[in-house]
Image (cartoon, rainbow, N blue to C red; front, side, top):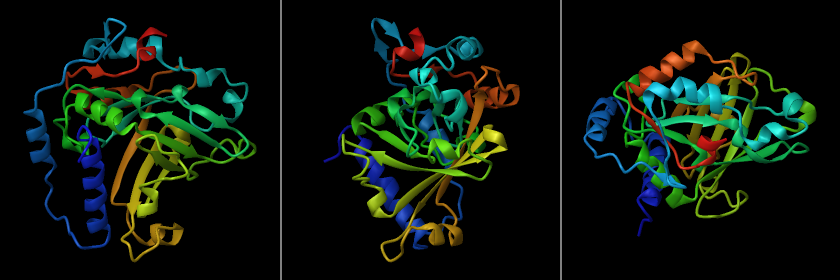
Length: 277
């Protein structure tokens, strides 16, 4: 039985990805406009509340929020952060449904010797509804952002990044981080989805202004290694576009793209430290 819908969603995505990756499903019809329309009909969950405050940034306040609250996370206090940390800034999700913004200063547990660090996905900021522009929404999910946050909580979803040891930093364009997941409190080493043949890469572009995020899921009869990925297109991809750089400068072009994606919607989140710092 699925927990809060999150487990069902993860299993469904994995199954569809195997079928597409194995060539058993050929997708010739763009169903994202229908998905967006159906998603827009769903009622929005109540805005999360923490410490008596609504965890929301009104659309008209997004610029001010980015200017005043960006890069306030604890990772910026690490003595090697400025020189060696591989991913700096605040990014928005392009082509990832209602996922909105992530501030990478809230990454934690960095081990400079091996180059791993982790992100609790409860630090994801989502838009209240769904993107009406399916070009920026991508595959989705086309669920109001509050449901995405509920799924993250239900799954206890975390990601671990492996980007290389500090002595190999900074990353160059074309260099990639590999990602592994943790769900339901399992260790990253257990990597449930990875053992099913799934692999994720996050590749640096434009000096870190953009990261390409690609996912592959090999069918059971194939091995999802570098050779497989070089000969098979990813089944899913989106981009992380930098909104605020390490010097707290706003990227006006990407900000405009985010606001077009929001189309007047607000941003919601779970963590009170994203509001109070």
